[in-house]
Length: 114
Length: 113
Image (cartoon, rainbow over all chains, first blue to last red; front, side, top):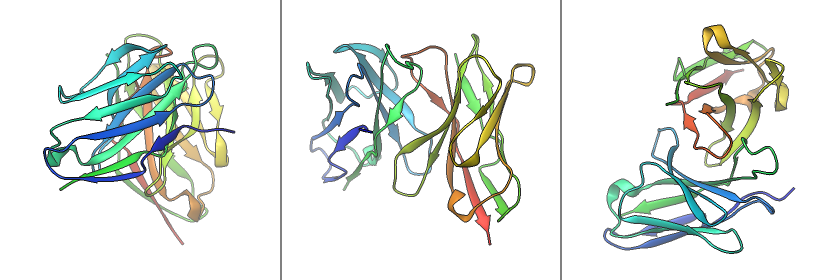
C-alpha cells in the first residue's frame, strides 16, 4: 500500500539559510499534518491542512510557513534557520472519508542546521 | 485540552517476558487513543488504536491495549517480548478526527537476550 512520502530524507543547512520540506500524502487523503521531533523528544504538532486550507495551528515559529497544494501535497518552508531547528520533521496524512481519526506518518526529514 | 503521560522512559524486559508500557491520558471528551512504534532512524508506525466499541484492541506484532475509562489509561502489552520489539513507543491522544495528536514523551523498550 502507498505510504506518505517525504523529501528530502536528509538536509543539511547553515544558520540563517532557508529550507523547504515536501510531503506527499497517501492517495485520496485530504488532510496533512506537520510535526517536529527534537532529539530525544516526542513529536510536537506544527500545523495542519484540510482541503488546502489551514485547519489547525500548533507551536509553529513565525519563521516557518506551510501550504497544501491542489494535488494535496504540502510544503513546509523554513527561513532564517537556527541551530534549534535541527530535528526530525514528520508529515502525516488522514482522510475524513476514511478512518479520519488515524494519522499515517511518513519516514521524516532529518534537518541538521550547522 | 488533551495530554498524555507515559510512565517509565526506559523499560527493559527479558526475551520471552511480558511487555507492559504504561499510558495515561487526559481528555475533556471521549478520546481517540493510539500507540505508535519508532525504530531507530525511522518514522512512526501505527501499532493499534482505540476509537469506539471494544475496549480491548489488538494490533500488529502481537501487541494489544485496553482502554480503561475509569483509570484514564491505555496501557500497551505483549505476552512475550521478542528482540525485534526493541524500539521507542509513543502513546498519542486526539479528541476528534482531523485534530492534532498529543504525544507522550515515549518509552524506550530494551529486550535482553
